[in-house]
Length: 376
Image 1 (cartoon, helix red, strand yellow):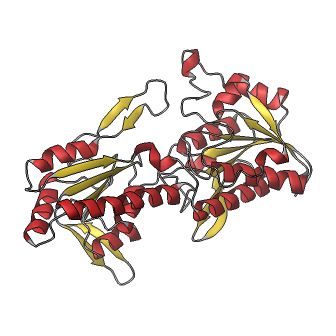
Image 2: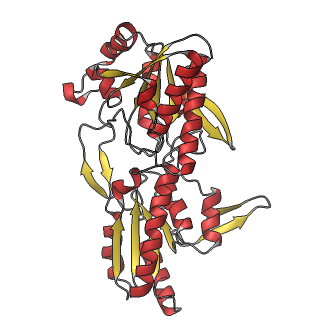
C-alpha cells in the first residue's frame, strides 16, 4: 500500500447479500495497510447528491461480515445526471464539488450493478477517481464470471424449489416458482438445475406454451404426476410481452418485472389435467445473511478493490475470471448486461438431465469439446 488517503465508499442500486462484507474488507484493508480515512455515503449516490456522508471508524466495520443489507443504505433512484427529486436535473457538478472540494476524497469505491457502474463511469470522466465492485443477485455484469449475492439468491431459490417439490408430488400438481433476475436468467437457470426443475424458463429463450403443456401432459401420462417449473421474472412467450407489475417513473430502470408465473398458470390450467399453483419469491432472494461463498467472494473483491485504490488504478472494477481475481475497465461494464448464451455450460447441463427450456426443437449438440444448445 502507498500513502494514506481519504476514500469514499457507496453501495448503489438494489441491496444484495454480501454488501457489508465488501464495506468491511475495503475499509479494513485501507485503514490497516494505508492508514486511510474512510467516508461512507448514505444511500448510495443519493448521499453524494444530498451531501450526506459519515466517517467510518474501524469499529463501525467490525462485526458486520454476516449481516445482510448494507450499513450505509442504498437507493436505486438516485442518478446524479437526471435526479428525479429535482425535476430530472443534472446535479453532477454539485456532486463533484462536494466529493472533491469539500470532502477532499482521493477516490470512491462504488459497489453495485450495471446501473451503479454506468454512473461510476460518468463520475470518473468528470474527475472523481472511481473503483468498482460488482454486486447483483442477477449475476448479469459483463466481464466477471460471478457477482457476489448471486450464490445466496440461488440458494434461497433452490430451497424454495425443494419445498415446492414435496407439495407438488403429494398433490400431483404443476408448481411454478418465479425468481428475480430482470432481463437475465442466471438465477432461474442455476436454481432450476439445483432444484431439479423439469422446465426452466429464462428471458434468453422465448418459450412456447404448447411445448410446456405437452411436457406436463407427458409426465402425467408417464406416471410422473407432477411438474416443477422454475421461471425467471423476465421470461416471456414467443412473440409475447414482458410481465410488468409496476412502473416506477423516478427510477433509472422504471420497469418492475413480475407476474409471469400467473400468466403461465392461466394458460396451463386450460391445457393440462393437473392443478397449477404458483409462488413468487420476490425480495426474499435479496435478504438475510450471505452464504459462505458470497462472504468470501465479497471479502476478496473488497480487498482487491482496496489494492486498486492503493495502486491508483482508477476507472477499474474488480472481477473474477476463470477462478482468478482481476480487474476490468468500468467503461467496458457500463450500460451492458451479461445474459445466458445458448452455449453456457449450465444450459447444456440442464438439457443433459432432461430439463426443458420450453422451446420446441431445442437440442443438445456436442462439438468434441463442450456440449451446447442449438435450435432446429
